[in-house]
Image 1 (cartoon, rainbow, N blue to C red):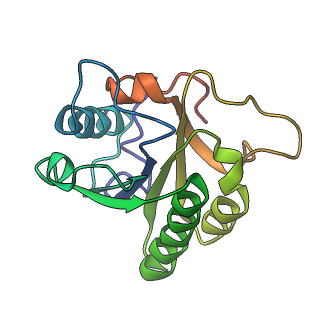
Image 2 (spheres, rainbow, N blue to C red; image 1 turned 180 degrees about the vertical axis):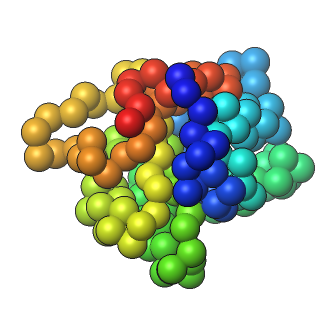
Amino acid sequence: MSSLTSSKYAEAKTCVFWDIEDCPIPDGLDPEMVAKNIKSALAKRGYLGELTIKVYGDKYQVQEYYQSAGIELHCLGSKYERFRRMYTHCFSWDLKHVPELTNMMVISGDNSEFASCLQHCKESDQNILTAQPEDAPRRCCGCSVSEAVVTDEWIWESLAAGEDPIIRAL
C-alpha cells in the first residue's frame, strides 16, 4: 500500500475510540503492544501525528493495565453504555478540533452503529479510519458506514498486530 505522507492528514492528531469488549486484545498481546502496533500501522499509512487511544470496556477492566500503555480507559456497564460514551466522545473530539484537521479511528464490533456520527465528522473535514473484527457483520446497502466516509479500514486482528488495512484503501 502506498504511503499517505503527502496527505493533508499526515501530521494531524489521531484519536482512537476502541470498544475493548467487541474487539478484545488478541492472545499473546497486551495493551502496550497493541498501542505500539496501532501506532505502527498508522505510521505505515503515513499518519505520523500525535496519537490518543481511548478504550471503552466493562466495569471490571483494570485501569492500571491500560494506563501504563498510555491508554485512557472508560469503564462502563453495558454495550449500550459503551456505544453511547464512544459516540459522545467522537462528537466531542470533532467539536473540540474544528477547524483543525484530525484523524478519527473507531474500533468496534459493528461500525455501522457509528455511521451518522462518522458522516457528520467527515463533513467537518475529519479523516475517518475504522477497524472491525474478522467476524463482524458485513456491509449491506444503507446500513453501514459509507465508503465515501472512510479512508482506511482494517480487520481488528490485523490492526492489533500492526498490519496494513486489508479491506480497502482509497
